[in-house]
Length: 444
Image (cartoon, rainbow, N blue to C red):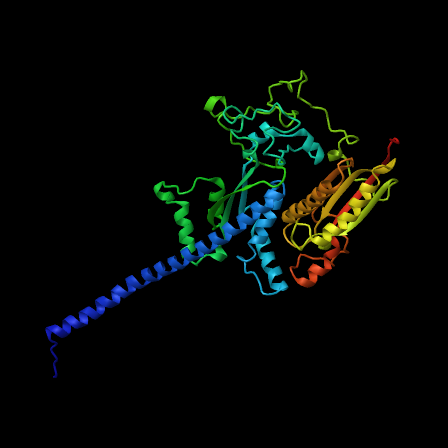
């Protein structure tokens, strides 16, 4: 019988082979996980770069768009198209735009207007500008800031940052500061590693450790998204109009921060809620219901076929680029024709008294997004008219977005399908209706 005796060196050699295999089984997955972690970190950096750019573009649009949240959101979404794939031709870009629009919703993006604050409007709101824009929202002046410290129609405002509600000067109140909180979707994360990243941010709940306490970030983590936050500040280039600005009380009371008192129902926008007067002996509380005969904001759009009413539809594809609320050159030309008419008839006894602007969208995309886009487009038309009408043209203008309501196309012609052919089918539904109500005035 043949027997083989291994030397001590051979036995040791075989033992080392087994140990190396065990080490490989333990170390290799760890190294692989670390490498994937590096890739995930690179993807987060890439997302942050795109987020920084999109936030800057959104702030720039907000600075010329009265700080409107809808304008900021639409511009941010458009600037993120590259992150969602971009494209080399119109069809690919349209598909990437559709992906961005579908993913960037109020559940994945939170926009906070940190400046001007609610208290900024308490200090510097101009009733005259609110009337100019036909809005019940408060408006802060942006013109001639080097020459004025208070609105021209509110010269008694408290412009001392040490004692007023906002802790700001009028110039400071014209700084647009926004905070964007965005969640990187699971599709933009490395499998397994991204989930681990989210679990770490959620905290080791079994040990009672909570990594995130911000409610919106917690909601993003619950969706499997990685939260990212970007701040940017830009000087306003238009009159800021209040729309959901945060409350951030300034020093006030010689440096002691105080929250603003609660506002009683039925009070005016600048009312402190204590029944105080406006400084002229008159009570600033006004609980009178809105009268549509004097306030266009609560007046319904007149029947386009009614007497003394002129109504026309302007194609959104002429006024705006697809998925945009910024007027095109062709759109401005189309509106200039109407402006010329309004300026020319200002001396007529029978002329335009009110203008109702209604924006509509097609069925492509999210309902809520389309509603916001239609509102932003109507407001863009309203703003352009107000800026280019002669100063002595007295016309009340109301802007309203109705989203996908009242389509022009027949059932089944325009669908939710995100293709170029369907986009063409849906073109009639993308429009802005301008209805002018005429009235008879006394001869000058």
